[in-house]
Every structure is written in structure tokens, then in C-alpha cells.
Length: 279
Image (cartoon, rainbow, N blue to C red; front, side, top):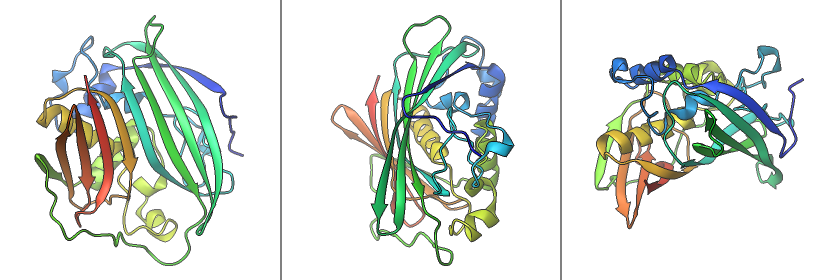
């Protein structure tokens, strides 16, 4: 049986922001791994490598999801999707540092919907490097636990007839290799990202689903590398799934002192909405 933790109970883990792991992230993003060394600041957005769980295989949920920092309760709801996250960057974390990770379930809410029962779980993570007394990074993640999907494969029928218009746009196509490498680096065995038959036959998706964290990483890399901006805070909503092998359009525009970044699917429908406060 999958272990669970009560809301508010904190799990403390020691992690290392190793240069080896950071260089693998760089390689995944097609950057020169040798451009990153111990003592350099960890690029903002790359801390996902520090949030992976080491849940035993016998304790995984039926969908393979290991939880992030704390075991995710099952509650008889077999489908799990990322609904959103917030991230606060207080100061830079040096590559090579040893840190404490504090993770806890902040809230667990049950709801009844027209599609059946649903639960909303919010998890808090705090990352404290070395002997620091305040966290460098604070992240909350909100997950939706859902009843089984009934019926045949569902395509992403939502489409927009309008072109994507923004101050800056780029396109990319997440492929199976990228999904595999991202999932491996975060030790995320959720089957919707790595098992096409499970994604189609059990979850009802047309293809592998792009990790919500990967979509976030692609947006923060757009912010870092193309716009040359450093975030102090992110607020992200995952509106619709993105699928492997299909073009994504990343768009950015200013909104006063903030930036708004969005990811659109291959039909120009909004998939991810990100509001960015700058450093």
C-alpha cells in the first residue's frame, strides 16, 4: 500500500546539487555541459533535479507517479495531472552545494464534479543550501487527482483560429528523447510521459504527455536564454496538456513590471500560462 503523509507533516531530505546532474540538464537542453562548474549559480528553473522522490517501486501509485518529496496519496483516484505551481527564488544556489529539502502536503481538498470525484493536493518544497537559515527556493505544486477516464482516446480538440501574437515567440517540438531524459533526471516514472500504450489505452490521451515541469523548464529557458531575464517569482497554470512530437509555440510579452509567458499547442490553443516577476 502506498504510504501517505498528513497535511502539514514535513519530510526532510539531504540533497546535493551536483555538477554531474547539472551538466546532464545542460546536455538535455543541447548546451555545452563544460560551461557549468562547481560554484556557478544554478540556472533558475533547473532545481527540478532536487525535487525527485526515491519512492520504492513497490510503493508507486498504479500510474507510476512516485510523488515529489512526499508520497502522493492514492485516494482511489488513479489519474493525476499537474494543475499549477508557484516558485520563489530568494537567492542563487551554487552548483555543488549540499542542501536540505523540506517537503510537506499543505492541503488536501475533496470535490465532486460532473465527471466524478476529484481531489486537489498542494505540496510545498523549501530548499536550504549549506548552513543557510532561509530557503533559496520555495515551490508549491498543485495536483489534481481524478477518477478513471471512460471512453475512447480523447484528442486535444480545443483549437484557436487566431495566430499567436507576442513580443517574442519561438517554436519547439518535444520528442520522446526529451521526455525520457527529463523524466529520468527528475526520477519521474509517471507512465503518461514514458509509456505510450498507457497514455492512450488507460488515460485516453492521443500520445505521450509532455511533463508539466518540462513545459515550465522550456519557458524559463526561453526567459533566460532568449530574453536574458532572471525571474524572482513564477506563477504557472497548466490549462491543457501538450503532446509529444507536436509543435509548441512559446510566447512572451511585457505587462508593466512583469512578463507574461505562455505555451501554445500545435493548434494555437493555450496550454501553459506563466506570470513572471523579475529579479
